[in-house]
Image 1 (cartoon, rainbow, N blue to C red):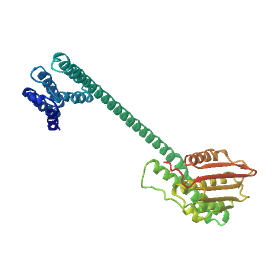
Image 2 (cartoon, rainbow, N blue to C red):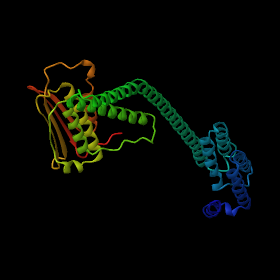
Image 3 (cartoon, rainbow, N blue to C red):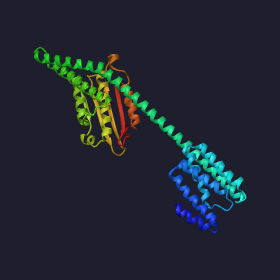
Image 4 (spheres, rainbow, N blue to C red):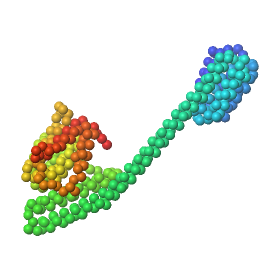
Length: 363
């Protein structure tokens, strides 16, 4: 590039007619090489050479004098503002004041303005780089603080779930297993009681397994991974559980259509079934049938889940419900583009859920 610059310089300027100018131009290009390898020291040598040779009346520079512009810019964006500003002033004065008679005054002023522009551009670029670096550091620190806070929350939640909830479920599972074993050995225990004890034991084991999977997720343990259950199987399990509590559940759906649903839709429908089953057992009337329907509408691109059951006349124990199940499910459906509608119609409780087939997957 320097060689091309020399050729261009000698081609478009008049310095080739002056041997001293040619010598000065070549010296300037050679000294500029020192700046490339040693930016600070080499730059000062180049600036000093240009200023010194400007003092020689016989030497008239060509394009090499404009190489001070990248030097000034480079120093400025590196943050060497003091020496960059000094070099700008010295070079400008050398052209404009001390040796103005050798060059055109307008050209000298233009050259000085270019140096000031190079200094300003380097300064702005340096400020931008430093500000961007500060923002990146701040972002990394905030992300690190967030991850630490999240980790602490996970650890505290894991400890609470393990020490209290898991402990209670473990004792309940052990007790239900003992009661079931005693019931099987006792001829006085009715078949209905044994079935309910089996249901109690199975539900406690299932709840404990789900809790342990939750703990594994909180602890980021990849060794325990939940195996997706087919939706048809989840429906059959829910019906069996409801039957164990004395409910007659009628399910209207097409298993083949359920098998075509995406994993995200299936997972969300499974959550709907679980919440609906929980509310049915707590508030439903086992003397009246419960109807569940799941319809896949490819034309509208939606899945309709509807559950209708009769409401029990007695009031459930308030400790059995926090009132947040349907609310959380509704929020999850809203994020995914679905709709949840629930309310009482006469003596019946109707839960209607609409889920888009191409739902938005959230993490």
